[in-house]
Image 1 (cartoon, rainbow, N blue to C red):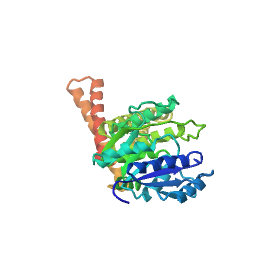
Image 2 (cartoon, helix red, strand yellow):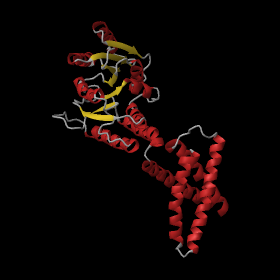
Image 3 (cartoon, one colour):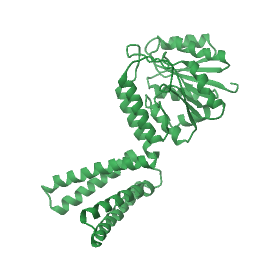
Image 4 (spheres, helix red, strand yellow):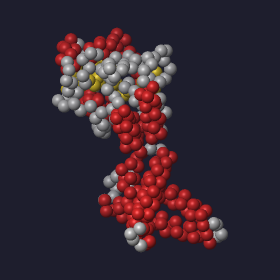
Length: 359
């Protein structure tokens, strides 16, 4: 394809009512000097969507059809489409009538001027008019965007938007790392864009939301999954203040485990046994939560080496807590204040040891 060509990936699942109109609207881009490729990815539709797609392929040389033999989800369809795209720029187009494809003329500008590597089309930047529908759906989108921004350090106004436009080399590099099969694609790809330090722009787009009766598929379960994806893919490389906040939650939870286990064990075992056992349980909980949420294996340690380095950290920080607490008391500082200071310093030390040594 010649320079400045555009591929639009159209994931499709049971969209027989809107697919043809969607493709015809996309084809209008050619009247504005765009060399176009439309990749319909049929995700094992059970209605007439695939037959309609085949008719469109026969009628328009710009249209290609890719198929899944099992329903895998929007994210999987987008991975398939992006991997097969040949345009210089690759965008996403849902197979419904919620978005206006001519908005891609605006989204292309920062890329053509070499100001951006990725452009998001925002439904929440200023537009002339909009259809009013679901408050809680909009609130969920905004809340997920806010949470995503905290982990990516990007100031995006609409992370969940369908309209995302990439340089082809960027999205094909990213798509090899993507894992989410459903709507978790949005927060996952945003996390990877941030971690790749790509230049990101936003443009206002037109948006006409459809109702669930009209075929809207995303629901509250997808919102929960998106929140999980924000945490799962964003936390390991989140800004340090966000990681500290997460470690504070982990530490607080493990402190509660420690106290609860101590209270339960004390009724059946001696003080020393209850204390040590509760501490070991809390330490194990801390390790597993750090591993699952905050940090990831980087192949620096064997499993045994990682556990030993974690135990070394516990020993060092436990000794430090003891020495600092009693040292401050010896200097005349009150016991409670001494313990509080040692706990704050110990929290910082534990976080740094885990971030830069253990994990």
